[in-house]
Image 1 (cartoon, rainbow, N blue to C red):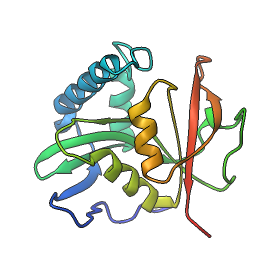
Image 2: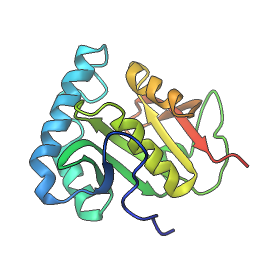
Image 3: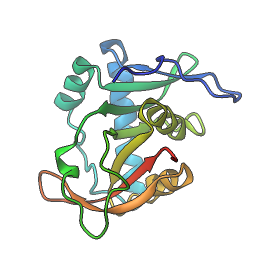
Image 4: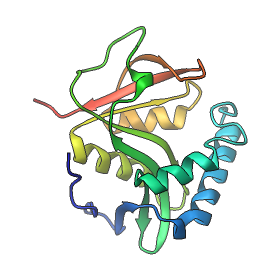
Length: 178
């Protein structure tokens, strides 16, 4: 599947756009993830990413693979996230529910906002959805801000999945209306 044009700008006072992350973005990306870990810890979700997740080696690999994206607000990185159209092995088994469909889907992981631009995370999710019309994502049960953002953007709770290390996550999906 070919991604739509890299710039996805919606009508707002902000000139946000999505582009692939590069090594020139690395220091700012690190700061955004540091801030996200701190935000989660301060808002009742200290265990999802702890003090070291996502690991730098994984983020660097994601940049090299062309699967880490940044949301730019002008010249400033407002958010960062992983996006790919691929099967996620941890999504093969879902408990206490079901996926909305079994068609090809995109996945979003490791989304983090710099908290400088209102709506940056929603912008990222809408861009990802525009690429495929079928997005799956998971989060920690204590990540209430993420759950609220997903619900606000039309994602539906689907059930529980388990990461490779056995930790449970709650799963959401959004599909294009038929």
